Length: 300
Image 1 (cartoon, rainbow, N blue to C red):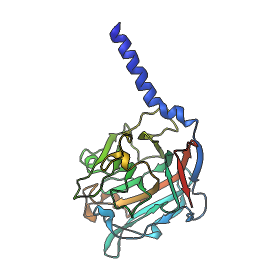
Image 2 (cartoon, one colour):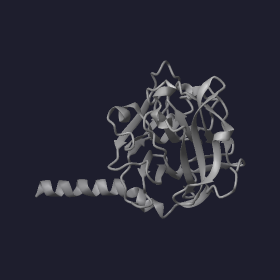
Image 3 (cartoon, rainbow, N blue to C red):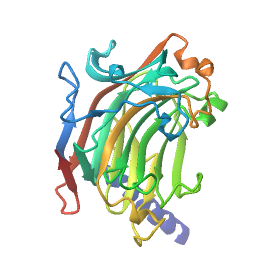
């Protein structure tokens, strides 16, 4: 009888923990969005990155303005932000692609951020990502600014296991200095039951003063359990999460080619671009908040 009571209590606590997102969703109000319904990118909301620095990860692409567009996704006909990776020679690089962010245009602390994305076939060598950096970057150099990776695909472990289309992760990075790769971070990888590269999926971040949580397809499954969860409460001291994740962050989308994440540094080994190019579609990105005094929104 005692064991049954204990199990009942434990089940209740687990249900309460994982049910929080669904319960809280009714309290959220839309405060910022882009549905990409204009014929060109709204650059009052976005800044297009142009450089060939490799993202600090030995990536192969040069990020170009021309690789960012608004197009209709063929299957649905929806207007989307499109990031196109191409195998081409450009400024001493063998590939081009796109990256854009809301830096200096929109930043926020706490809320529910979601994006509906159709990923390209990453195969071997593409690295699509939906993520954020602290708004004090680059004044606070990485990883001191903090980083929240809501969705990444293309990791070398997925390639090794031949689960490229199902293997994805969320992660957080932080710390006072890079120190040759030695800095606090936490990432969690998941192998989904089915491909995430054959249709649109919704990736959601729920961020409050106690934790960072990430969910897959909450639109279809409001009671989904998080695929990533990390507490950020506690003492705000150097190298502890509470020091880095209670300030505004800005949003980033990019499609990298090769680099340390995939462990591919030769364009001839990027099988994902064997046909010349690949596209990442973003149907929308939306930010919701509850009106709490702890939340902030910087919308220039």
